[in-house]
Image (cartoon, rainbow, N blue to C red; front, top):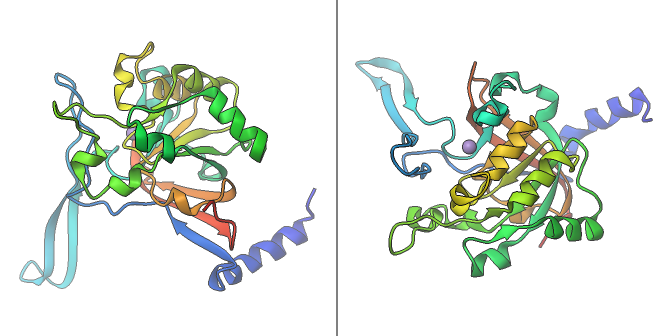
Length: 270
Ligand code: MN
């Protein structure tokens, strides 16, 4: 057990470590604007609106001293956080405002499947993939995250590519198998799953049993999701600390967020 004085010393040292880049702060967040692709669900399901800014004033007759905007967005647009209540299996569980603050700062393991996803936009991570990772890097972090790097963040500026739209405009992006989702929910010590795609489930998962298994099992188990993460290639396989900061929307199912990672200098995956 670390003595409180040692903790206080380490905490006091942290800003200096950040200043001197002994601890790097990696921004895991995409810019949120009207080019951010919202997920498109097949009708009659309702899809979220595109993020839009509405200018209130810009040092003009509407307010000579101030520039500011109002905005509209879906809760699940851009780099964002999924609370358990987002899914019907977690309907009695936490909304985004109820997620304890301590859980928003947590260690992360990063599984890189970008090579497999480059060759197959419907690639699914299996339990074996995660357990192979654990044999090399140690077990998934207790109370932390499994982050899956598919390489999709590099497609972010190109909406068709990010949604993986094929010739018939059907979407494709990677995810996890039904069994992997169940295992992460029920057997892994993590509090959630983060990914660089538009959602924690693969585009093709609407046809799975159950549909959208990462949402189904993880939220049903009170766990969380993070989507549209950026810069996962800058994280080590283990050792990063993630700060996930969704807006505290009362009753919200999730929220756009600023996601940051703290990484000891030199601890890079690639
Ligand atoms: Mn979501």
